[in-house]
Length: 291
Picture (cartoon, rainbow, N blue to C red):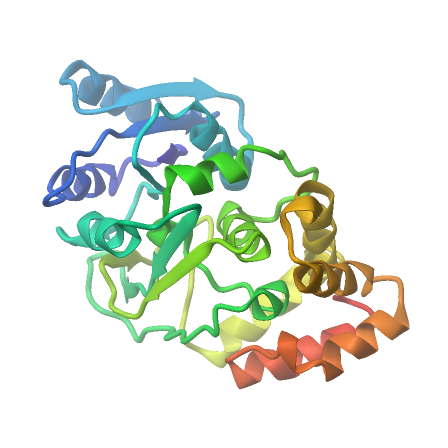
């Protein structure tokens, strides 16, 4: 868990993690440079009670903070990311572990979430039905980090390379998994109450206004997000990819500077996202040189 400042929902989230059934849970928390004395007092109290271990460091932002945690975590069969403000249903981790059990090699699980407001009242969901292909992952960013569970072999793969650019840890983990041919499991059943409130680092909403505002902000705040991620995949994992995977990633990496690569992106069905609205916006972004 990467924690920053607020404690409003922390106790509820911690209790839901401690209440996980049929798994042994060890919780490691990193204070991401927060200025919150109440947060540190709460973490101190939990550590003194033997329920978690925590440490603090400079503010890295959620992506780098979570990857720092993954690197510092002790040996385990599986690893999961936790936000500080959600509520996990009691079967969340056991369901993921069961779906990953018996896998030879790296494997990653993620699931649908149930959106709720600050008081845990259900909200309209953003329902995803991903194709689970590398091509789709290179153009469509939809994975919820708070649902990700990976086995130890997948963690080892991720720790091989520290990317110079990483927009969010969940997107990076998912892209790496598909790029190296790991087993990837999507569970359409929600096992987490994903709380939406004014302080979310990243949130979701099921409205066209929210989706278009989020896309506009991504295009204006950071240029060539997806091609930069693809370039990092090549730099870190080209030797672990099949020839076809390298072709897909290289095309995406070149799209920011090559019109030929952009044309291949919009005409090759391997990149087609399951979400038709996303497919349209991706093609527009690619042809405008914004990919």
